[in-house]
Image (cartoon, rainbow, N blue to C red):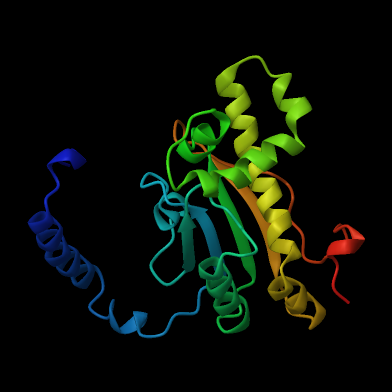
Length: 213
């Protein structure tokens, strides 16, 4: 396979034709089966090009509903994310929502620095807040790479908590809808997904101020 530096605009269109040919060769009804989507999973992941949801979970198109942004953030004022979440939970009736980060995340590394990067600084502020909450533990880690990896993990855990705090998720639980929320971290070096063991299917663990009746 050619290195991605050699990918051209025309090459993408040519690749599409090859994709169609390969798909139909494998299954003549491939595209007919995609006329209706019924995915059981919503994936909230990082926009990083090396972390494609379907490939790393060995799933097919139609099986995972995907939302991606810088550093897999769940921000309560982000209407883009909330719209995707609302559609996934209330229309598609997904049974699992997974916040998936990855070690070596550029957004997390940028948030750990004291440099200005531009407009994205406003987005990275949310990651800096995660650092502030867990500052004592993180500052005690002397190895910079290990510290950044731990912040990646805390960023996933905190964003799982943010997900649980949304009215969309809590109303689904209140109505008795089956909905499980999870946090994962993917390793680019090994391909292994690390489950953060923060899975939940109710708001029992939320602080009282965040619980809706």
